[in-house]
Amino acid sequence: MGNSREEVRDRILADVSSSYDKTEGTIPWDIAAAVGIEVEAQYASATAEEDRFFILTADRTGLVKRGAELGKTITPATKAKSEQTVFDMAPGTIMLAGSRVSNETQSYQTLEEVTAPNTDVNGTAAESSDEITVAGNILYIGSVIQFTTAVAGLSTGVDYYIVDVDGDIIQVSLTEGGSPENITADGAVIFDIILAKIMIEVECEAVGDAGNCAIGAIDSFPTTIAGVTAVTNLDAANDGFDEEDLEDFRLRVLAAAGRTGNSGNIDDYYNWAKEVSGVGDLRVFPTTDETGSTVNGHVLLRVVDADNLPASGELCTAIELYINGLSESDIDRKAPVGATVHAVAATAVTVDVFIGGIDIGTYDWATRVKPAIDAALTAYFASIGFYMNADGEIDSREINYPVIISTILALDEVLGFDSLTINGVAHSISLTTSEVPVLGAVTKT
Image 1: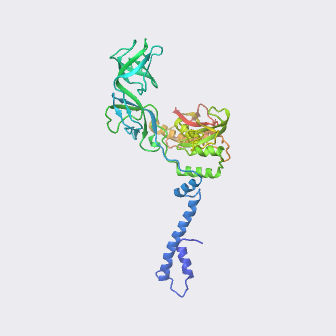
Image 2 (image 1 turned 135 degrees about the vertical axis):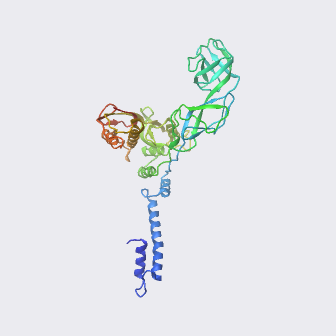
Image 3 (image 1 turned 180 degrees about the vertical axis):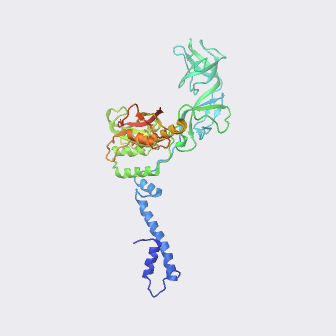
């Protein structure tokens, strides 16, 4: 029995006595038609409510509610960070927290306030190591100083470059990037700052993958910052992840419904790690420490991020903190007492692809063909799962040679080729339990 407005209307009219005129435009017909419209809407709403209850058919609102019943929430988007962003600062400059820098598309903010040293900085020189200890040092390599009080081997009133830094210990040279000066006596030194290079952590203003960028990409200022002349990031800004895709969350809720966590079994560790923003997937190795050795009371997690790439050190640390807590007495700790979790990035297997005798027609290799191949192969590698099945068994995987061939041939920019190798071989490559493929060089003849 259908429940469209027409079907409801006709069923109502069928129940009305034939002694009444029920043709279109009459009062019985108009009343039945109006009721049919409303009943159709009610049936549609009831069906939607029913669908919202089930994990497989729920919309976002319903899925979030079903996930909450299983202790699962959508992992939020995160902001990319660069921990090693170096600023060129004039002596005494105050860099406020929230100061803004940028790359070509995104803006970033400093996460702490820093004041560049100015004059009369005290240090202790050591003849044996050619090092100077400066308590609370924040100067980085490339900073320029002048000694006002020096020891043998160092001169006053001359520019020295800091060429090595290890916490409070620095080494200096008369040339930028040169060998450390030979200090020939122990003693106190005092110096003034000519140029301070200071490393400050920055965070992208926008959430998500868009904030990730390469080394050196952060190089400008949206607005002038007094006393600051240059900036560059010495590490890639990373760990910016988009909010978990709804369908990925659906799969995680389904997995949680099918997995039977029980105070520290494999399913528990899997589910706990997946609750950390940025985690793509993982493998759980019970009674295993961070070196891979069998040790009771330890659990090893090998992790990939949301892009199916080896997890960063920061992400691994976040997982460990989330599961281990600050201590065994931490009320937010997930792991049972006596268990220690080690999160370690999956091992990257760099895949170099060589294509012999490729025919690309009139397309340009550098600007059109290679980027298309890179994108297609990166997407294929991301599709090679890194997971355990519902029974906790580790699935075997491989870099499939025929799939790579078909992936490249499917591109409009590639008309054909004579040969293809991956890492020098013309066959599939098996992956071990902790390996994940990462695209390397793509070359051609």
